[in-house]
Length: 374
Image (tube, rainbow, N blue to C red; front, top):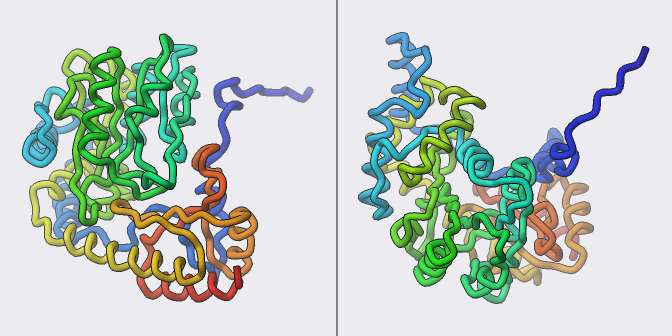
């Protein structure tokens, strides 16, 4: 007798990531510009820390919130670099920044609550809100203001049902960096309307010619999310963190505790080494990302493709006629891109390029794209 198993409506209401769908199309000769993963090796001192921890037998459960040494180092980083009054007790070490986002959404959002999200924005925002029973409300990010999330636009979307706002600076997929007045304005909205502002700051050190501002500097109603994947080329370690007001940390911990228990012990030692060890590699990677950005933007503009100059992360978000067709033609040339609609309804008319690939591969990819004759 055949048994039909039905998934939940919450799962049925979301799609698999468009980024991963494009990643699955990578062929033997393809240049993959779809995935936001630095091509650099994890710095040697971080890898050595893992070896030492393994040799010492540091392979068991840790505290649910993470080892205290790491939480102290994270608190110090937030205090000195981000001007956030964090303490080790306010921090939870998570399975990547994605784990922090998932815990935040499920701890904060009830059925029917509205959450304002950037659009175009990272694919997980819409999905996490829906999985928590909430309703994502897209805030349109526009080309003509460099895809910044403008407080006045966000304020127009606030209703009696609004529970939270998600912001992301530097942003994925646009590379946009919010100005100080943007960040403070969003923080003020959270305070004035008693909302939670979830601030995804995973790219806070990958920034060019601008300054990063954290909303938790200006409001207590903020959950700050960050991690190690992008800054330290540690994507496979799957380690991030969140910092929240003390009254909220225990509620966030409930979701974290019952979904993952704790973050991998060895990854925590790696993260500790990343924060407390030499930072030279970060500057070197950021300088190389800027060189790659300039190459990609310059080549696209030479092809007649409109492209804003991003000031952070490692993405460009060009606009063109029929970008879906362009992505399709690029795939025929063995260059993997992501259509803008993967990042929300207002991503229409765009496509995303990740320049986290090597300079040599980016040069070859631009040659192949130019040969399309768009």
